[in-house]
Image 1 (spheres, helix red, strand yellow):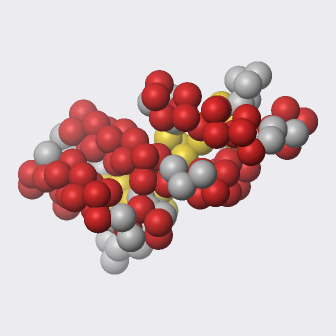
Image 2 (image 1 turned 90 degrees about the horizontal axis):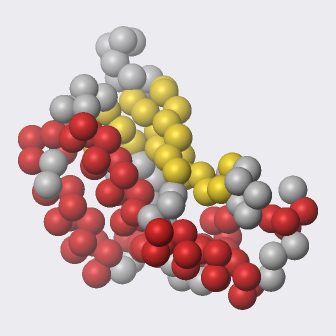
Length: 130
């Protein structure tokens, strides 16, 4: 898609900032099995964004710009929010896995906020793998 590939750095920053402000991330979930029990699935969390014409973009398109503009902690907190909402809404019937970025995990403010969010899950925290 040409609109995705022709954005300049400033345009990406404006677009990504708007996504954060509007909390307009989309999560897709891919099932996979890592447990001994073949019936117990884990759902890997995949971040997607819609481009200017409403088409879904895979993370490989926008993640480099998120990292370049040092927005990883903001996006990772939004991702955690979405997954926590999903776990609570499903009363812990599924197990979710999320990959957080290294810049986020190196950020003490992010880690503190992430831990506070995960504590909201209480005993359902067992449904989340980071």
